[in-house]
Picture 1 (cartoon, helix red, strand yellow):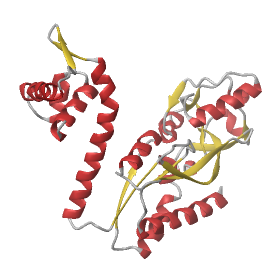
Picture 2 (picture 1 turned 90 degrees about the horizontal axis):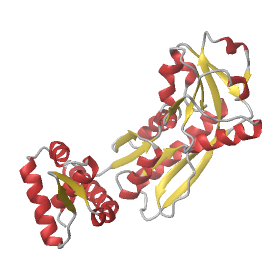
Picture 3 (picture 1 turned 30 degrees about the vertical axis):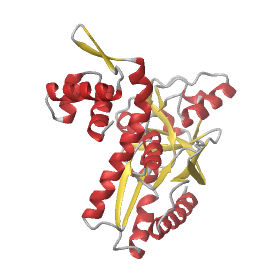
Length: 297
């Protein structure tokens, strides 16, 4: 399967229809359909069945798709790296982080890194944990900073430490009179927090079970920063990580959450890739900055 055929196959599998895939790739539907037909002819496999004018992926297509996405991600990473080389950006550090590290201790780490590596370009992303894991594995980034310590056979996971979860409320909420909060205290409130299948969600579920109550947020989020407009507008009370600089946002009150529930802060790197001196310099700055941040919490 050639690169263009791989791109078209993945696009159709993602989009679900030829129309949407052609729009995503900015090509005509007939051209896309022709590429699919040539792909099937060359492979000797039926990837899609045409039923009542619509394309339906076969079991073979579903079997090939995960590997096709992995290979395509690798090709995309190679293409971007080639562009960096072409543009003379050989000294390039690529990293990503979830929002809490990116908005708390990473700016200080990057400032220190830039003092020692001013000629090295830095490419930074904010991304969810699942995306960062795939980006590290594909080589699109070399360093990820996350709030997850989930093991992966191809990743080095360095635990920097832990941060507590906190309760955040609208500054006019009646519960701001409390210095500390438990889930039981929030039983009559609209709870805003993480989905149950996330690491923070799992930890809060265990807390709820010990208190003999159910952890069932009425408003679920994937990223803690998403709770901000809800709380500011008085739509509920949130239990989230304490790493975000919540005190810097207007209209927000922060209270200690009990029992103390910690979340890990980790650095993810690829076991198979040797880091450059610049990347190692950034890691050193990240460790130092996190240590300073934790001392302030």
